[in-house]
Image 1: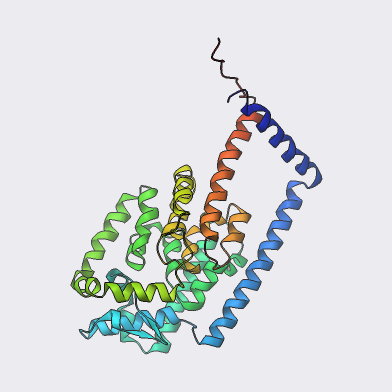
Image 2: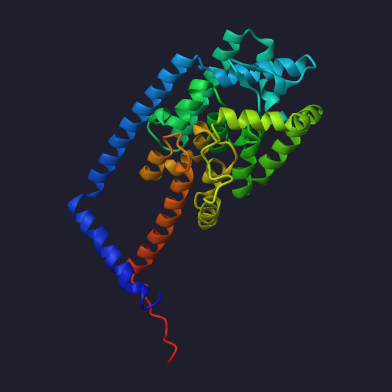
Length: 320
């Protein structure tokens, strides 16, 4: 640490100590806990009302089932959909939804809904969180529309032996597997994706219409993709290498992200109430902002820890 940095770090440490004296750790934890719970309830209630108004309960399962049915009958899955929503996922996602095409829609909704909810519970408990975290909007949104994002994080953190399946459900599950160097499930997952090879020509041919569907259905997405914010967000992810980047990368920079994508960031949200709060809203740039905030916090926290431990050595000046 340089001689010019030490006073600034000292002032920051003094300020934090002053706040600590006014509001102890237990009080801060209670405020954060009740504030998050209230936010979770309000946002989830709004999403439920919206789904009731627009008839979008289980909409993702309904869309994926229609696409799987088209695939089984030799038709174009990317021309299929439900309630005005088109299938726009890569071919591997079709594989876990092929069984749904063999079931009546209500039965498929009940079966896939039960699995989604059960895995969501496992994910929350695996991270040591209370069950009210099922109301964390990225998770509750996944459950409401039956999107597999919550199953992806459940497989990654609660069912590691089945983690390879996460790549089938969402191809971007390969990102956290790669960043955590979990090579075995990554390789198995990618090999399983080869089962979808017959559908890739149709997927590539439908590229422009798929991109249009993604842009329309995600309202352009809420990540930093395609904006100037990519630069600081990628820098923040580099700072968070092995300290959260593996969970924040997809919702922060993947194209056309929606609220439920942030379910993958649950391990970071569980550690930081500000990150959790920012991830509650389907508002553009909030996930990149949460990522940048968390990177700054990690950097500042490390410097404060170094200062408080007494490791405040001063570098020699140029004249010495």
